[in-house]
Every structure is written in C-alpha cells, then in structure tokens.
Length: 252
Image (cartoon, rainbow, N blue to C red):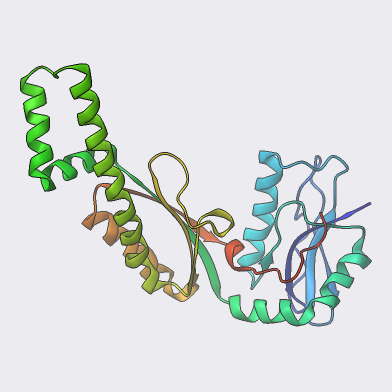
C-alpha cells in the first residue's frame, strides 16, 4: 500500500496523538516516520485517492494541527511514496534542503489575503474623484439614459476607469501589508496576476507568530482607510506558499 505524505518535520517532533486521523474513508491513522534530523507525517493512502473537498480538508486539518506543535513543511495534496521506506529515502536524499527550510520557517505562519472591490463603494469613489465622468453620469440620468450607443459608451468609460483603479489598489494592498511580513507570495502557485472578475489581489504573507497581531492590525487599518476594498483573510495556515520543495517533490 502506498504511503501518503502530509508534511515534513524535525526528528524531535512528537508522535501524533492517539486518534489522529487523515484522509480516506474511513480516515487513515496518521503516524510519523523518522530519518536522521527529519521526519514525515504519513498515513496509508486510499486506493481511490481523489482531490475531494473532504480529502482536501482532512489534509489541511492534519497540517494545521501539526503546525500548532512546531515547524512543518506542508506537502501538496496527493504527495505519495510507494511505501514508508521510499518516503524515508526522499528525506535522506534532500535532507540538507529540508533542514534549511524548517529552520527558515520555524515560528512562522502563512496568511492569505484576497482583495476585491466593493462595487458600489468603488463606483462612488471613482465618480467623486473624476468630475468629468461624474458630470457625464448626471447628464445621462437627467436625459433618461440617452441612446443605446450613449449608454454603451458611458458604461465602457466607467468600466475602464474602475479597471485602472484596480491596478493601483492591488499595489496599495501589497504596500500596506508587506512591512509586517517576512516574505510575500503573490497568487496561487506564485501567479502575479489577480484571478477572476473583480479580484484585485491574491497574496500570501509569511508572518512570524509573534508579529501576527501586528499583521492583522495592519489589515484592519487598511479596511478602515480604504472602505471600498473587500479584504478576506485566511490564517494562520501552514506556510504552503513558502515551502520551496527543491528540485522535485515526492512522486504523486
């Protein structure tokens, strides 16, 4: 049976408490295997492993509980080795890299911030800052909307102005929060561009646990100063975006 790898920890990391369960149906018991300075949190892998919502949540729960006890390098969902011995061989092969990463991430957690526009608030702000555009909207309203072509032109003008505001607001979010973080990773899989309609930024911040309150205070201050921004924060999380697995990850 294949071995499922949740994450990598130091060899002094304690055994998982009795009853700790991971992925699968029924959930598989989580155990620890050790090799030199390193260890891996693993379980047996289900034969029908798929990235279901339940499986992803179980994977994350194991890592979140592990991170509460010490530094952990989270592996992506679906990281497999043929057996425990193969998992230990991976630890031995990449020992120097993993030990360095554990030391670098010790005491640090990840916060993910997704920023988007409050459409009504940003439209109000754009019109307040642009007298020419505001006058065009007022004339349009007084004339009952104008012709279809005029409506289209006005809509395109407003949309272009809002889009231009998006780029500046994305930079504003980064500059406001970056000073409280140890490192920054923009977007899923390190993507630099925002995703989805209205999404300004999807940024992960590596934050020392002792600085977490300062980071969250910076988020609150940004919300207060920029009420047209909708900021959604997830964390503290294991540092998924900052693992840097090296030349290759475990097969899976």
